[in-house]
Amino acid sequence: MLENLFVGIAQWLRALLGGVGVPVEINEAIVMLVKLVAILVFILINALWLVYMERKVAAYMQARIGPNRVGPKGLLQTTADIGKLISKEIIIPKKADIAVFLISPVLIFVPTLMVFAVIPFGKNMAAIDMNIGVFYLLAIASLSTMIFWMGGWASNSKYSLIGAMRVVAQMVSYELPLVLGLLGVIMIVGSMNMSDIIAAQEHTWFIFTQPVAFLIYFAAAVAETNRCPFDLVEGESEIIAGPYTEYGGMAFAMYFLAEYANIMVICAMATIMFFGGWHAPFGLTFIPSWVWFFLKMYALIFIVMQLRWTYPRIRVDQLMGFSWKVLVPLALANIFITGIGMKIYQAMGW
Amino acid sequence: METSIYSVIAFYGLAITILGNATLVIFARNIVHSVLFLAVTFIAMGGLFLLLDADFLAAVQVLVYAGAVCIMVVFGIMLIQRSDMKATNLFNRQTFAGAGLVALVVAMCAVFAGRTAWTDLVAAGEVPANTVQAIGELMLSKYVIPFEVAALLLLVALIGAIVIARDEEVKANAGN
Image 1: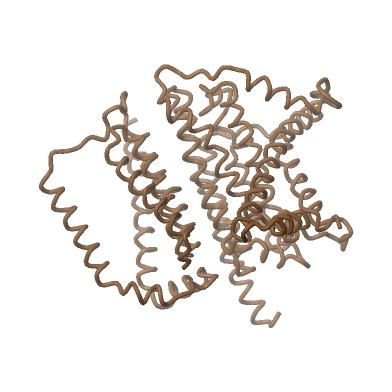
Image 2: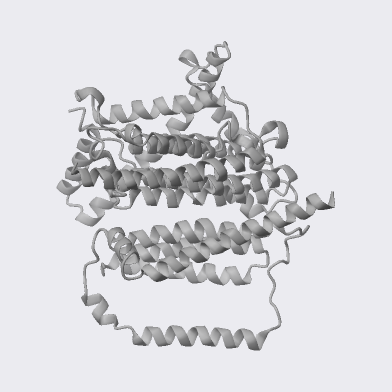
């Protein structure tokens, strides 16, 4: 019953619309729309909650209590913050490129939302089951570089411009090891369909067969979301807030929430590619598959948050060197060894 | 390929988006705006590929053109010092050369469009659901030489970039 909760809701909706006599095409369109709206609401609520989680994690790591006044245990703190941010004025700098300046925070959520459409949250629970799922995700995710740059450039401020340059350089550099790292898994599975990749991990998670690939992916992914220790983009001690320097109120909040939505994307992706997706470990299948998926995802998010409060920021030259001189060669070596290993196993007849 | 009313509507929507944005790329006087319109054009072209059931090509279009080619232009913009971006994408006076080039491109498109057997293409019917494997196999069998030549070209470009960057550094050190 719980296992098929969301699948059941979709079927019920389909049957309901079919019973009223809605044509099949419009029926499907409505179901798809409901799915996408559900995902959007899910992302926004999660992003809100993750801000709270980040503050709590930070507080406990620094021996503080963190937000504890608004709502039970301070749970409504970020809701109150968003309420404040909405009521604030969005100041547009005099020399800004107004249209681009205002479009950028609006667009920042679009790639993230499009990416979530292909993520399978549980058994049969991908909104769209796409043959080239992983590749689609990487392609769409690469668009966000442009949107960050739009914001930084249009602000027409020195700090924003330096931040925008760093965004472009960093995100382009780390996209390469990210893709090359995932290639090891794709080679083993022989498919870019996320459901196939999860199905291939029924017995062994790829974290055990591709540990190096996971480390490369995780490092590159943290850099892609501009999180510490790779948060040079918004390094507040150097360039205030990077591309977001000139943004205030809800426009700033959009970037802020998008960062947390992107953390969700990379952690969901790591769960799918390396931690068996919605498969239950140790045969604990009485717990629904989507609960397992979220448990794994939040465990990874927790690690990302811990990283931020554990490590200092690295330098710009170290950032570039780490990507091009460490991660990329390592990823290429991993692909090479994976290929040889696959051939050896085939020769042994496994 | 579908030929329902929805795909026809989608096609005209995409066609208008592509042509409109491509026109704006040319007529925008600020080169930053031009790049952004160019990105929209590329993404809409990815939509055209989707309409033809070529989902892999659509993703490549978005990844390579919108995600990488536009970023290259962005690098170019940021490396050039210019205090005012208002008039950075202007027309030149090479009317005759431009007209000749455009005529050549149009003629080439017309020749290829005339030589393509459109009715056969439509009659060929279903596109296989999984195109990635077929593309990969073709690239490493029938088209292996062009594929490897392209790889070699990229390698040469990469090494060239490194050599140019290194040379500057050596000179700067020698100057000190």
